Length: 275
Image 1 (cartoon, rainbow, N blue to C red):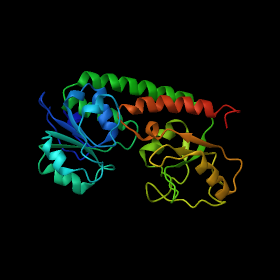
Image 2: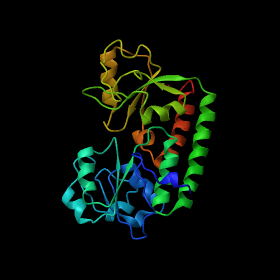
Image 3: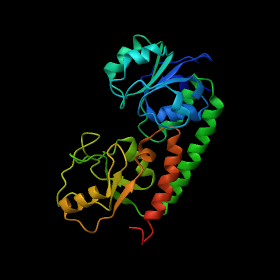
Image 4: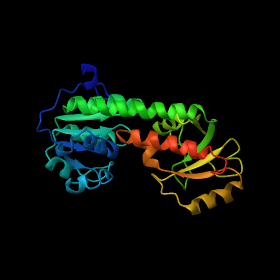
């Protein structure tokens, strides 16, 4: 384990924690990762959105949401380490937490391969390097299988929708878009200057699109929303499909399952009768 693996997303160096570390995770996918790494007994707090692994989390106190966590509840847990994410948590909250928490670990995976450093960072800090390396092997196997399968499939231009009213999609520099790229899917609207741009639902929206993907989160799309977009775009030919948002947007250990999921999805969508 090299010393470089102990630097977080801000370049802050973290020494290996004591065995009695008390961890609060304010990032749902990282909460899941901690349990996957065998660190669940050290997790003393989580957000309301930290829902996996469901049964194991039943006894772990909640401290509110990823935005505006309850500082009184968080402080009462006496954490030695709080894990946050640049995209999911507000800087003003993180700054306040740092005033009463010895160690704040900042994460910011932007590409699927960033998961490898994330596994090693947390495995290194909390003393379970073996589990981290095992997960790295599983990740690389899943990624290689996805890339190999996608290489034999035609590329697709996809519009990945994450919100309605307003309709919103993703740009190419997001983690989600990079995951889809492994399946040989290029996200439309990737040239937008913002990472999660709004799009106008009219007749021009799908002119350069092979497929529209309706994510299960953060907006819970239903069949009625597909029908609504059909009406607004006057499009009857472009395939519309639902996609599991956790599998595409959750980094951490979920990324391994996510790449396996995308491999199966890409192969199924390539079948003539599937779309």
